[in-house]
Length: 299
Image (cartoon, rainbow, N blue to C red; front, side):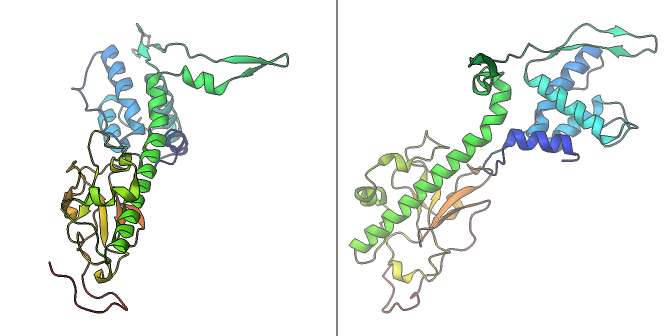
């Protein structure tokens, strides 16, 4: 972000959204040369500043007077950024240019008309008060979508982490009851279900269309937990688009694109879970963990 106004507005809209998967900026159309068309294209592109700022600025550049962009011009960056912010908000409410006039200096002035916004007021002890929640419900859908998207994406990521945590704990409980052996590759969902008792945990909220949004790491399936040399680094479950019950694969099968802010959640063999932008590198080494004895199980 290049100046305070856009930073402030973006923080408001994106609401500290580390889990928000950003959509691409709108594709630029051929540069128009009619004043009405230029204004329409300018308004169409502006909301992209809240989604993919760099690409949107590139698309806007051919429509703006050279030297007058937010980075330059005698008014300084503050004025340009405020125009982008204000007009971007108006665009999200459905604003459109009206018929304009050419002034004596040859400049075209076009009014930008937006649908009226509404405030909801309620009487409280004889005094009128603004009801912000009811007012928000009447805001244009495009405005609400930008603001609510990050919160929804963050909630999905947290629910997914909870699912993976429960899968990892269930697998470890299964191992405790089966000579320290982790669930098998071909029927792990069936084996851990008695420890879950809720099949909804198999579905990632960011991919509800999949029968199972997760996969068991084939490198650890059926292995003795005592022979995972570093459980905190060994991925046990991960998000995957394999999509079926008992899905098993390697980390190359992690969901692409990542489901949460461009990355995925992972559950490790010590039952801790975390988000990562890229899959962990190597498979966990197998060998006696500290204090473990005896040979590793047969493949």
